[in-house]
Amino acid sequence: MEQAGQQIFEFLRNYGYWGML
Image 1: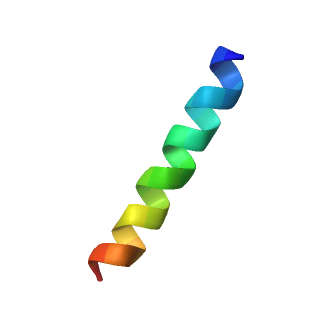
Image 2 (image 1 turned 30 degrees about the horizontal axis):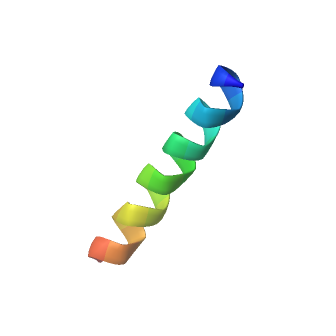
């Protein structure tokens, strides 16, 4: 469960980077 949450968090971080651009 924790592993999956961390993966999603990383994905959101990457997605947010694109959104800022």
